[in-house]
Image 1 (cartoon, rainbow, N blue to C red):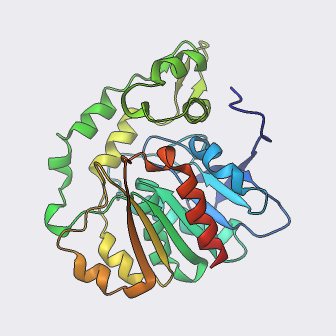
Image 2: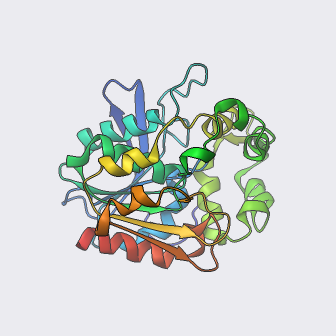
Length: 294
């Protein structure tokens, strides 16, 4: 399924030393310059989901939109039993920065991908020139739930009920378009999600590349301190927060954010939901371009 007539992004597979597999990505922009932006997706999605949002920047900037562990075409092992939460995504991104990026980059991401980018920037501050976070997942300390509590959440149960296969990519696209969480997405955005979110099985049907059990595990197994990570970064940070249903909640954490001074800016975008990048791609592009130019 080719969503539009723009040049097809380059598919990359980057073996990550010591991580047990390879990270897949789509690459856009000129190859004769260092990577400018590494973009990470939300839970259950993939890098191609954001292609139409990012590709207008590719005339001048080199961009990697990655598939995190357990998503898309990445082959990094997605083992649920005994996992250490989102630290896996942090360490995968840190390995990617070391192996695929020759200069400090803008780390960016949506939802879980934004939080993973924050954690990686805290772990490897010298490799990150700026953070651009689009409704990242960060909640006050006194609201954080343990894995047992999260196990009964609507997000976990919804993931576990997700339909895993369709007769074709077209059937999956038609099932999603205009419905549920996809109701504010463009046709192109849904096409891109489906193109990389389903692979062709031996029986000819298409099946999810992110297993529902893995998606549910990500909702259960956060196991990180976003506020400590903010303090450990060194770069400028731009945060765009959804007006409705945001996962970036700061009640009680004002002191932590305040301690960062003018290094961090937080903007709530009117009329947006947690799917802010799909609803305001213009603001995503403007924020990324500003971060690169700063």
